[in-house]
Image (cartoon, rainbow, N blue to C red; front, side):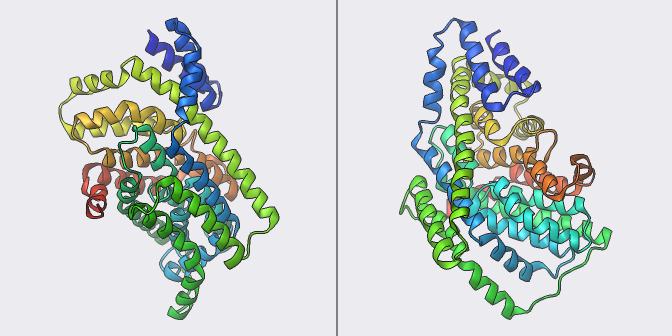
Length: 426
């Protein structure tokens, strides 16, 4: 009955429109009261939820991404991407995917990615005769690549929720090949759609222009190597690398690109503070929720339930994917990672699935929910930028959705895609 109270209150509050963090906290409190425990337990577990030192990396990386977003990096990355792939079928659609991939390695956030790249690329595609739905769909789907590239906030969050036994550096390495595979898959879908609709290409600017634009983009791109290379080489921890990223972003945007005025800086600070507060509040509230799941032995019950259905590893993984994709239709990414990791990670371990591999599966599967209505936050942002109804975008998103789903299945059932790089770089 305690489990029914915990999940029942949570589901009910979500249905009536209560924000996720408040729903999680209220469900935890209701369950504690029902069990007759001291309500102070909820407060203690909330404080413990965001008391992990590794979580400091998240607000710092968010701030670094905001600085780069407002300091001129996105324009240079778009220019570089245009020179590299603009001549392919689909032109600006291909540019949007490559630019999103490059910017994802700087921001680590799908929302920041679609905001930065979408605000430039979607209007440009519309002016060149691309359909609004195509412009929105290719951009929002490409933003998912950021979820798997360093400095992905969600991979850091998974590491923290997994108990600290999963290396952030190894998670960053594990996400690189799946991220690139996802980018290629989306480019393929963009190419097919562009051929069907006969969309134009961009003229090839020549190798000289590529070199010039690459040089202009290098200061921003170096942030990727500063973050990942520093952690991988053991020079600094994830938190230290996040602090270095903030300093580096400030120096690049102030001294190199000179695009960071006082108004842009204060805007970056304010937006980073709001985003960090929202994320950390969800993490804290979910700390109490996770403690209750452990107290009620829900993870072990999940293992027993799935083992009762089947002993086949691949079938269990397929069942988990279906559950995650369904949950993604009404839950945001961070709460899904926080709630589902304690439940499904023990199941994955029981079937000899590497935690690194499972972390990539979870983040990608939950990330697909960001482009799935009714609670697809990345889809909402893209549709708002493109000024089209969600329903119009959803009607033609299926080729991009299928591309993302195909990559998810490949990553799930071919673990070498996630595990090869971490093994090579150890």
